Image (cartoon, rainbow, N blue to C red; front, side, top):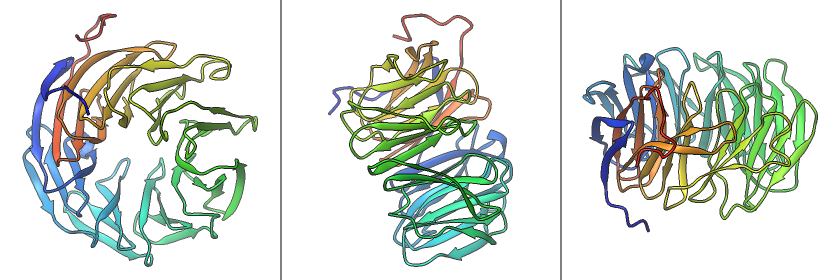
Length: 357
């Protein structure tokens, strides 16, 4: 365990507000153009906080019997979706906090939700199947049975959906019901992220490695040597940097030029326990990271993927999610103790090479 004690924001992170929800806070995200923060806990509690003050605008309890598993916020509208262990998918209006549509998918766990980039479709996975619904909750497509439980889903474009399952990543054209591409590898894939242009596919594997493919060339490569499963993966908005967890160290691979093959990754070292959340800012080479011990850091990356911490805070509970405000002037964090924090971020014109210490 970390020997750190709880400390207030330091460096370029500044106090905003803090709040408490009823149970383990599993997800958060900004809505209404950053004016409000949506938070979900594992027992099915939903909370909408005023983004500036932290005051609760509304609260709903027990939305999914047996527990909440996933939340997805629409990219442009006042709409979000939730799913849980009761086999149900629910689409909500965040302004009126009422249900647009509730959909029963069956007796399995609905684990993954993702809106398409244009917000026209919502992708859902349950057990060995993937589904696509429109914003009104009408089913538009469903997959055939996968080789195993679908472990991750991601959109490569507004009409192409990628699914990860045992030994393969499959790309579907959801408007035509066709398989566009299948990438195979013998192993259990536990996480997946796509580059913004949809060309690079990166997956964390059960064998403590990161495997990636370039769709345009068909070439693939493997990064090994992680102490644990790389469940946390994040691309920056340019598609150059891929940040990966798998230990208390953040490993950053650069896809600049011919990389990352044959290059050394950047290494961000300051967390005392394994990484539990990674989130790139919407603009610029800024990465926010959270760890199991409750530490949160914001890093500025150089062109090689190395970096210095610009600010940090320690809350003493496992960080489950970090969300940058749309204008990147603040981050929100939620943790296993039900804590919610909003921290203002102010980037100075000149950045010290020594970090915030």
